[in-house]
Amino acid sequence: MSAPILELRDLYKSFPIHNSLFARDRHVVKAVDGVSLAVRQGEVLSLVGEPGSGKSTIGRLVLGIETPTSGTVWFDGVEISALPRRRMRPLRQRIQMVFQDPYASLNPRMTIEAIVGAPLDVHGLARSRAERGRRVAETLRLVGLVPPHAQRYPHEFSGGQRQRIGIARALITNPDLLIADEPVSALDVSVQAQVVNLLLELKTRLALTVLFIAHDLAVVGHISDRIAVMYMGRLVELAPTRRLFAYPAHPYTEALLSAVPIPDPTLERRRIVLAGDIPSPLDPPSGCTFRTRCPYALPTCAAQVPAFRELEAGHFKACIRDDLSLQPAPGLVADQTAPQ
Image (cartoon, rainbow, N blue to C red; front, side):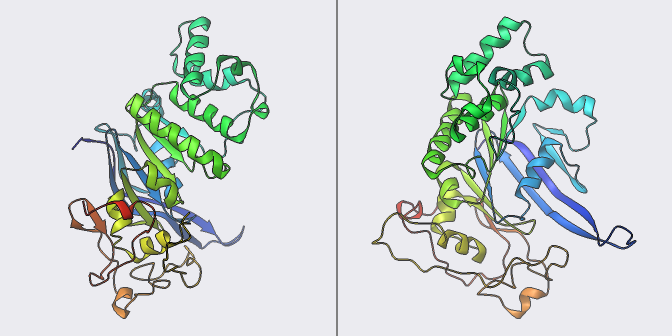
């Protein structure tokens, strides 16, 4: 088993919320609530959950866009969560991000050559204009575009092509860690598979480590080595992909798997519809935050926060119910797998 390149240790991130402009009292929203996680060198680990679960906040904490309230972020053995900007800058070229909206993340007034080559300028990685142009052309080819595209502008491309441009910009510094924040959610379904397959190809070809943030389990099931499921800022389950799809151990994971469309009308499955909405992060439920929507909740679920514990090698969950036999994901990954 490879060593972790990224580690989150007891990570918290809270945001103060004021009731009004002149109010003295304030509330605190816990966007990330005590997350500990290790991403191994060369793997794809996916963070999955509903909007507001804290997935994107974790990506921003790793990049240094946000500062942790407490806890630490470690990259390749170096604690980066408290590094000053001067010391963090050399590491930034090793950690790059692909953003959700491929159009909003590209400057419409810049050519593709200027957009993709900008990281080379920031980090001083090109010794001449000719070298810069050569590296831009090579990187465009790497993501399935051609060098003449470098002289065009973002509005001249389709959504899938714009996301390829965003991936090229992230790859031009030869990073070790790629954070992909909902990279296909803004794309047509027909294009999503192309981008996912591209990321898989690049991961193998360039020996990348990928932290893939998404809400669609059908997408992450095809790209991930492991999946971490989040709910209201906390990890509720973590397992290898095949194990998670075949043997979910947390009721929230079961509900997410039941919502994934199956392209086979002959397969039958029980659709789990969760009761109510996600609780307000300003006033989360006591104990297990999922208990107010959980079909298997007991009175004792309100007493204390369930420990995130290991069930079997590599399979963790945060639930007190060990007597449940939860529904797997038919027709996706689970039907071809055995326990790992």
